[in-house]
Image 1 (cartoon, rainbow, N blue to C red):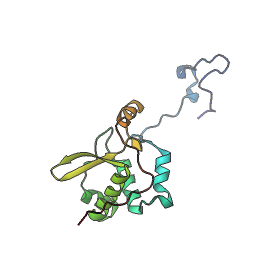
Image 2: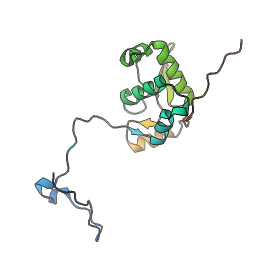
Image 3: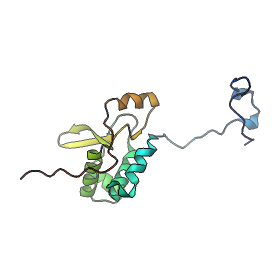
Image 4: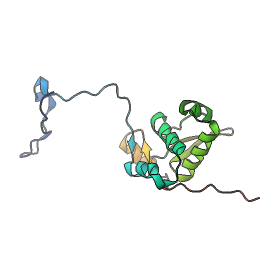
Length: 156
């Protein structure tokens, strides 16, 4: 690849057309990388900080949702058993982590089929889609808590 050139002429403000550049000056074409996710570095760093209160399993499960969720506002339609097999965790551990992430707002309940709940990423924390779609999705999404909220104990 040739040396980097500015995208605009700084004296005139005119954009350079890629077609006018030499053959060797064309930008590198990225291919095979798959889809990209817009993620909040601040919320991600808060989740992964040592004193956040989230467990290692919580962080692992959130990463699984981040990289395996379908585009847009669709939930990840996998059972805790399927997620557990992929992460080498027990389904109960996945369930507990999803509960923590849901209480903290990193995962949102998206749909319920019978007794099975499916969760999606909070679009304020991470979103797979255009920035316009993400802005629309965040209008009704709550803000995630950077510290893990405690489990509510049922009254006996």
